[in-house]
Amino acid sequence: MTLPAPLGRSELAAYGALRAPLALLELPLFVLLPAYYAERLGLELVAIGSLLFAARAIDAIADPMIGASLDRNPDALRWRRIIWLALPVLVLAYAALFLPPRGVPLAGWLAMTSVITYVAWSVVSIAYQAWGARLGASDAERIRVTSWREGAGLLGVLASAALLVPDRVPALVGLFALGALTGALLLARAPLPPA
Image (cartoon, rainbow, N blue to C red):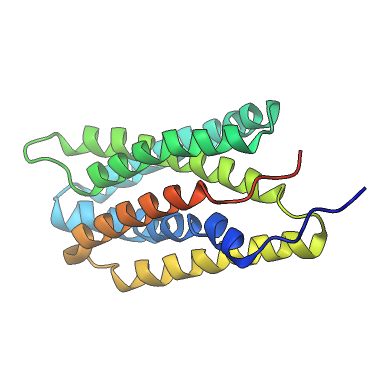
């Protein structure tokens, strides 16, 4: 049996690139969002904390179901389609979460958009990591796959940290949308695991 050729840098970059925008949204969700809703939008911290706790609890219940669903049919082409379907939902929900329309009841808006954001992020992340876990013909190559993915994630965290102030929320949302679109397009060139 012949081993497949090692993954090239362009293939690793095509797969790893999506991790940058996924990491870009993490700090704002956990650090900036509560302060933003309290200080800029005027929602009480007790309400924010309660709503975000409930949204995370829903996500915690959804995560194993998402993983089990993906495990039933471990197919990278299917994972890519799932990512492509869930990523626009994630982008729109994330934008809506940070840019609520005027006059909307904030508590309900925060509850709805945070649940959609968290669940869409879980769908994308679980499918994406399941794909990466099956790439590479050896332990060394799987380490390279993970390194490229998490290296891109570090770039996303650094970009996020540079924009982690309420005045830069529109730039943060725009950068996430652009990064997600770029990552999604690059996934078309990402390697598929061996059958």
